[in-house]
Image (tube, rainbow, N blue to C red; front, side, top):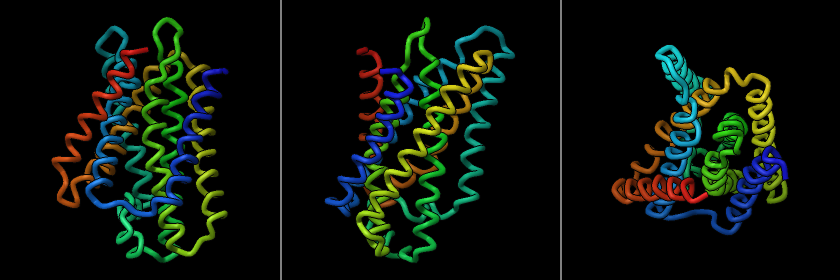
Length: 251
C-alpha cells in the first residue's frame, strides 16, 4: 500500500476505534484519564521532535537553522491562532464527565467538536509532511505512529460530550468518522505540499513540529496536572516519550 494511503488510513482508523471505545467507556477516573493523556503527551513530544523538527534541521548553514527555528515558532503560533478562534477547547477536555455536564449546552458542544476537527487537520498535515522526511528516500513512520496512538483517546473524547448533550449514537459516530476523514485530507495536503516543494520540506517539517509541540504543551500537559495526579502523569509522559523512541529505533 502507498505510504500516503497507509498513513491516512491509520490516523482515521485510530480516531474511529477510539470513538467506538467511547461508547462503552463514557468516563474515566481522573487518575487514569491523566495517566493516559500523559502517556499520549510523551508520544506526541517524541514524534514532533524526532519525526519532524530534527529532520528539518538536517542541513548546513546558520541561515538554514535560523529559518527552521522560525518555522517551529510559526507552527506554534498557527495553533495559538486556532485556539483564539475556538477558545472553548480548554474547557471541555479529557474524559471528565463533570466538565462535559458543566458545558452541556449544545453551542458549547459544537464549539468543542469544531475545535477538535480544526486540530485534526494540522495533525494530518504533520503526518503527510513527515512521510517525505525519511533518510535516503525512505518513509519515516514516527509521526504517523505517534498521532495514531494519540488519536485513540482523542476519539473517545469526542463521544462523551455529544452523548451527554443528547445527540443520537448514530449521529455521534458519524461526526467522529467525519473528524477522522478531515485528518485524511490533512495527510494528503501535507504529503503533496512536501512533494511539490522539496526545497521547503525542512520548513514544512519544522512548522508541523511546532504545531504539535504547541498542542502538547498548551493543551495536553496542563490537563494532566489539573486533578492532583501530576506526578503519575509526568512518569506516564516519560514512558510515552521513551516508548516512541524505542519503537522508532526498532524499525
